[in-house]
Image 1 (spheres, rainbow over the protein chains, first blue to last red):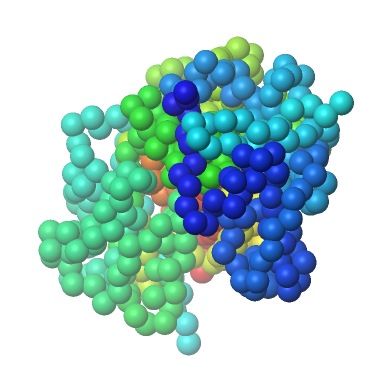
Image 2: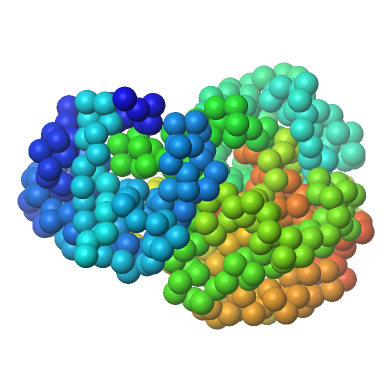
Length: 133
Length: 388
């Protein structure tokens, strides 16, 4: 069990989190202009098409931004501090946020290669990142 | 023909922790203090703009109606608006547009805010308010960490050090020591070493790299220039404005260092027919120590990667060649919650009006005020001048 935030499943986000549960990092692709983006857009942010498909991303990418949280913002993250929040540019060009696990947070550099894993939060799985050696 | 517009009055409450004063009462206290300090009566005011009342998670958007009756005003132009920290330069612009087009002749602009305590559930509340519930909140986001992500790119790409960031906090404190209203005045001076030795919140920000949570607010009277000259000896003329909005989250693609300030600053300078070299005082939103550095570069006060050297030279400090945040800024005057951007406007207007008291800069002929909202998402740049 965890008291950390658990995404609430809806019709909109369910295909994404169902993917996470079977080890797939799913991203959206616009069938009109081929722009790729995270699922949290109802319309393509490039052309406003609503004809959107799903694609399974490789889960591989590079760290573009990192912060190490020393003072947890609320209680459920206190046991983890210091923990790293990173932005990752996936090989598909889509940016994701995650925690970078399985490494010393102080050792994380911009440009570091990472890959996605999936962490259970209650009934839901969320993507996280680990170093990709 | 469009009217010339000027600020006829600017008032900032002394920031603090007003524990027994609720959010609406704080607006009332602000108005009592401000309106009794200006030579105007209810009949003079025909325009009104306010920020919503209350905390960011549960704002009261009907505050304008509550205040009209209390103040005895019947405006022909009114709105309740919010662009986060970018609200207040925009508020002056909206008032100026109303005056330029003849909708109003004197517009009262106000904002008061209480900064929610991070410990009392405020941290999680704010994280949910500003982050995506599916894609960001699960990772333990909060405001310092989101700015920390931006700062990590800035430091890595432009060779900026923790000491450079700390120097911004040192400068803010130098100004605060001169300002009797500043919250951190009594705390005394700080050094770069003090900042670096304070506890780490979220890299690269130590405790002293962060602004000071406070309650407070400010009021500005924007008027047709002929009225402004009647009400005050030296009005602050509104000569330039620019605005640009962009991403609503740090985790969409795009370069986080190419902020909307590049466009809003260029637009404001173009309209004012001025350049960065003409600016004598700049008030630049400083929720965290890294943001004035990046924004000095984005606004064109120096080249890319040159802000650290500029700030380390003492340029921002009292007596420096580009005084910045001359009242102590959010970092040492106080971050007054949703009213924080107003403190930049009142401090900037008072400089142009020659009424900044112990922090007055000689010949503050042109003053730039830059606000941003969200995590550098919304950008508004205002230029005030002593001459129309």
